[in-house]
Length: 586
Image (cartoon, rainbow, N blue to C red):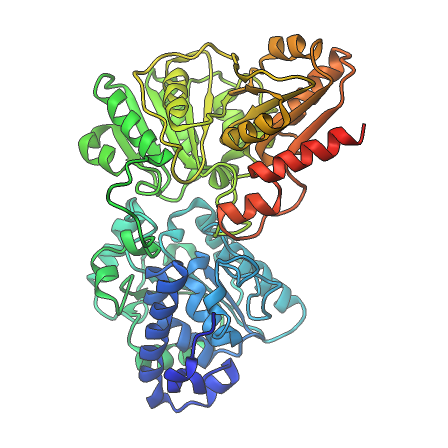
C-alpha cells in the first residue's frame, strides 16, 4: 500500500536529514505539525505504537536539525519512540510497512539504516550502548557526539542507573535526553518518578545543582518544554558546543496532537485493534490470568502480585484496583521484581510474578540464584510466550523453555487452552516445594469454557487421540493444529502439559507401540521441550526416530502470529506436511 507524502508539503521537502537542515528555522513548526499528522495517518493503518512517537516529534526534529547525524550517534530508548526518526531518515514512504511481514522493523535496527546506530527493543539500554559508542569515538580522536533519548519509563531501570554511574565517572561527550512523559507502558512508579515531579516544579533552571543526576556527575539541564521547537534548537546548539556528560530533562505529552491519546496514553500506547466485536466473548490468556488472580486474592491475603511496568498488558488492571495492598508495580526492573518476590516467599507470602517471556530473560540470574537455589515458592506467570507477532525479534517469547528447563527444581507447565491455563495457574500456586512456571501466549484462547479450579497431577499428560504408527507429543498452544494433523495422519496425540517434570511414563508406554515420535512446541527447538524427550529416550536407549517441530536456530522477525506460524510450518497444514514428509523418508 502506498501513501502519498506529497499531501504534506513541508515534510515532503524534508525527505532526508540533509534536506531537513536546509529548511529555514521558521518552517520547523509546520514540519512538526505535518510529521505528527503523517504519523497519525500511518499508525491508524498499521496499528503500530502511537502515543510515544507523537510525543517526541519536536525532539526528533530538533536533534536531527542541530546534530550531524549519522556521524553523530543518536539512540532511541524505548525504541517505539523512533517512528518520527524513521520518517525523517529516508523511510517516510516505507513507514506504512512498519511491523508488517518483510516491512520496516518496529524499533531501531542497524541493518535497516545508517541512522540506526544501535538496535533497541527492550528498554534502558541506550546509555550503556551510548557510552560505549562515545568512548570508541574518543579513542579514535573523532569529534563525534553521542545522544541518548530515553523515555517511557526507561530511566527507572537499574541498567540506566548503572550506565549513568559509569558515565559520570568517565565524563565523555554524552548527552542523555530524558523524555519525561510520566509514562512507561503503564504509569511510571518509584522514587525517581517522584524526584522528577519535584524537578518539574522548578521553572527553567538552566543548570540545577544537587539533583539526583548532578550527584552522578551529570550536568543537569531543565526541566524544559519538549514541544517548544525554537527553544529546543537554541538549547541543543548551546549544549553541542560544551564538553562532558549532560542530562537534558524535557517535559512532553505522550500522544501529543491526538486528544484521545493525550487523555488515555495507556490505551493508545499502541493503536487499538479495529473490528473487535463487542459480542466476542472469547477471553485472552491475559484476561484469564487477571480473573484467576482476583479469584485467588479474594480468599488468600498472602497473595502478592508483582509486575515490572506491564499492568495493563498482563491483565492486572482490575486486580490493581480491587486489591491495591496486594499489588506491586516495580517499574521496568525485572531483576528486582524476581528477587523482591523471593524475599516475600522467604517470609511466607505467596508471590506471583507476571512478566512477558522476552523480559524474563533479563532476570535469569535472579531466577537461579535467588529463587530456585533456595527452593522458594514463586509463581512465574509468563505472558507472551511463543510467537508474539508484529513487534519482531526483540519481543518474540521463543527462548524461555530452553533457558528455564535446565534450572533444577523448576516446574514448567504449558497449557494448550485457556481453561488448562487457569487450572495450571492454580496448580502452580498450590505447589509449595519450589518455583513454578506457567507459560501462555499472546491473544485469545479457543473458547474453552472455564471450570472450577482443581489441582492437576504433577507431570501428568492427557491422551487426546489414539491412532497408529505415529505418536505426537504436543507441548502447549499448538494443540489444535496438532490435532488436525493427527486426524489426517491417523496419529496418536498426547497433550504433554508439563515440560518439567516430563511425563516419562507415557513416553515409555508409547515407545513400545509406535514407530515414530514427533514433538511439537511453539519455541526454539534447541534445548526446548522436544530436547527433553530426546534426552530421555537416549538415556533409556529407546530406539525410535524423533522429529522435533518448533522454531529453528534463528531470530524470528515481525509479522502476524498467523503469518509466522505459516512461514515456519507451525500451522495445521505445515505440521502435517512436515510429519508426512519425514515419515515417508523411512
